[in-house]
Length: 407
Ligand code: HEM
Image (cartoon, rainbow, N blue to C red; front, side, top):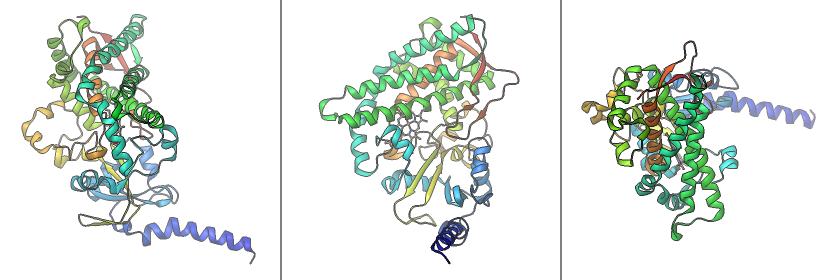
């Protein structure tokens, strides 16, 4: 045999081991229940990409239990967790033992800012970034959010006045949330001297906020409008609340306290983030062998905390778990069961979303501005689905029929 033949045989043997032997006969994860692999190369990935975001995960969890395994690329076993106690172990009790998987393209895009920093570097960056997101800073941003919302309103009005009523809203909302992130980045720059970062850190952090904060809020606002278009009664109830608080629609100029006092708006925001949160697949890898509950999880396992699934488990949310029902947030019995362990649109623990206050405030102001000024309806025959990859966006885009609220 030539050296070349040995080499080729070696490669074939290695591939056979990686794709057939290790995942099914050796990996301790083989013992977890889960859907059978569907392809030698793609495992279950095709199903995950083909169906709407979150649908296969929920189906598998309902069928096989709250901790399951599916197969990724080259049949690599991946754990999918929708068990709230294990989520607590990972996000709250041992957050630094479960790191984010290496993401070369992400790091090359935004650098090792908060999202990709680990361990003590993350702790330090979190400390220096936190002052930008305090209550008083977010409060100060509110007039700018209103100004950005007003520009958004003006652009949509122009479109309607030019005779177009079926509007692709995605680029408008995306532009508005991009403007908001510009403000956030400006407030990093103005931190007190003791919180100052190096030039590189500042650059990474600015890029990080741009990428984490722009699309997430844009997607959330789009989904809220989608749900309200599908549920005209809920849209009317929200508008009633807004009209009562802001009788003159040209004077929609809420303060932080005013926007947060609107109960139904709050319910709609929470319900949208329950059903279609953009950050609902939290990926981790364990640095060492772990025993979580009854489970042995070998070092370097790929783990996905399936927040979108937890947000739809009937044992938590009841028989209407799949439905858009903002009123559920007013039900005291349900509220007794809900905590930041089973409702986690912004994750939990030291790696939770640092921008959640900014996100919620801008989300409420943009949505309030839009619903106070416009009526949104579905466009007949135009179907919107939830894209599976790379982000759970309205696909192909958020197209709605829009008309102006007269007074
Ligand atoms: C509705 C909008 C948003 C949602 C649903 C959301 C959700 C999340 C989630 C789930 C995480 C945790 C990811 C993980 O642990 O792997 C996260 C982290 C993060 N988010 Fe957000 N986010 C939103 C808006 C924002 C905004 C507006 C900003 C910035 C202005 C922001 C900045 C960040 C940063 C920097 C992290 C990393 C935090 C860390 O690791 O310490 N996010 N976000």
